[in-house]
Image (cartoon, rainbow, N blue to C red; front, side, top):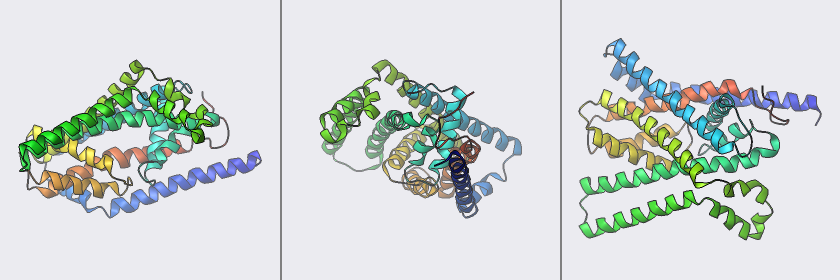
Length: 325
């Protein structure tokens, strides 16, 4: 293709992505009754209180994705150097792509198109390492919370409960060991003839040292704490009779279940709501408030960042080398 055709096609792709994202977001927002319930719940509260609480939750959203940008920059530094702002742009752009792709797969494309073309596949592999670290914490905390939930709310034989705890502990240990030895995956792929010829793409797996993986995991932990705190604030604000320990347990379970199910960001609100209602019914009968809390966090953590990311879509370079200041 000539440079002129590439330029026209690039502009057309960017406009299509942004228009599709905004159209889907608009249609989802105007049909979302849960957000309307949230507005009904808070309309009687003092305006200063609403501004204060929502301001804190919005600020934590920016901190959350800022930490993800720092993590992304650390993950990719062995492939290509990114400025912090460039990492922020790529993270928010990925969130726009994730809106209309299953299991947030578009997030990979949104980020790696900020890299030079020859390094984009390697960038996907690096991103998988970061995703693995985040899932590790989500699953470990979620499994612990499930064990606590079963002990408190489920009539179960103590021997069966001990077996559940033993299996859960073994799974968590395996996951932890695998993460800190992610280079094993490189060895497995090298041992298979069908994947050996692509070693230049996944060889980066062998370069991550344990100290580096620990820093990545600590950033994942910081993110987990931030977006968990958002839920604590919203639940304890709208349902003040809840106990913090109950919210902690049920939020961890909700994250665990959501991460284990296939989803689409725009439809994810349904999965989040059903999951939250199923577990929170054991500690509160304020079902409308539970769904409203979940809907508000979905709006703040998914929809607003996707809208912000649409501005960075126009900085993508689909065909040529990525230019930086």
